[in-house]
Image (cartoon, rainbow, N blue to C red):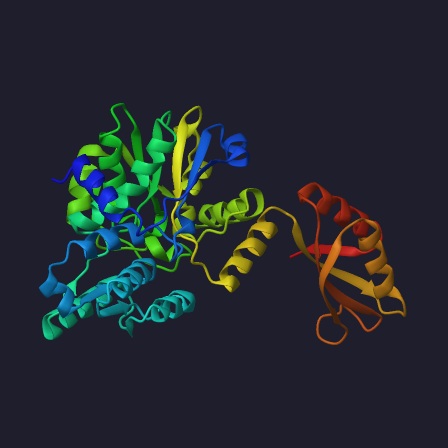
Amino acid sequence: MIGFDDVRAAAERIAGKVVRTPVVRSDAISRLTGADVWLKLDTLQVTGAFKERGAANRLALLTPEERAAGVVAMSAGNHAQAVARHAALLDIRAVIVMPAFTPATKVTRTSKWGAEVVLHGATLADAAAHARACAENQGLVFIHPYDDDAIIAGQGTLALELIEDVPELDTLAIPVGGGGLLAGSALAAQGAGRKIDVFGVEVESYAAMAQELGGDPVSVGGSTIAEGIAVRDVGRRPIEIARQLVKQVITVPEHVIENAIALLAEEVKIVAEGAGAAGVAALLAHPELFRGRRVGIPICGANIDNRALANVLQRVMIRDGRIMRLVLDIPDRPGVLGEIATRIGQAGANIIEVSHHRLFTAPNVQAARLEVMFEARDATHSEAVVSLLQEHYAVTRV
């Protein structure tokens, strides 16, 4: 098994090729969770994710013959961009196989680095099989996203920097897809000279490592905002390391990932994709595990579609009661719409959407049905607006 020295060597090898990203303390998340929370902002890498570390280390170790042949990789996005960028910097041909569902943002950004992008299959496993076929047929070097010692050592440089910058850390919460970052972080923690508990974090629908470590059959699937860690086949090398060095792999529900994205955007002013926010989600879902600890968390990816980010923020606002949708049965008379809008406005809420129905849903010919969506400061404010409207109209929450 590789060790701390390999992580240290990787850090020296990739110095100057990747950004040494800052670590910041989050007062907002610390107050919310009862932990002392420090965030490693690998969203500031050139490609917006930590994957550059492993790719830079792996490509730096290619022989001259391998560089001449070119490389192929499979990825849902961040590893793809990382390999594409560092292959371009080294003037190496790169073929990237991505699942057909990969967000358009990641496909476009990968292509911009000059890589040959191939969309193939519905899953990472399908893409991996095709990438291996390309490697065999075209003589390319296959660059695995996580089941590779050089990749693991490179990813471990994130935790190495985090521990160096905050020596008092006693806990790491690391997102888990294939396990490369978790394994590398565990190796970095092992060399810290003191006890640091390392937790892995998976989304519930893709809890492959937790299932394997627990001796359960692997059963994963479904859509998730955390597509960057939606992995069925965990790496053999990472799981070997995890068995020895990781304290626990925990899972978080999908909606908590969304909450973490919104929390980072609204309170910390950081954009994170679902996989990149998983470490924060762990503290929201399992505060009892982290309360009173000094926790380091990598915000390890920022590549989220604008539309997806907007949808997440609105969904969280609905769950928080800051956006409310109501149906009102109202008299069908002139001025009633203005009357309702005035009442909502005077209450300090902002109308987002209005839909007025006379023919299809109104209870009788003398009435109309109005659907109103409004935004309030918080759940308490929303309730006050609803109570005000209920004094004058028949109101139903939707």
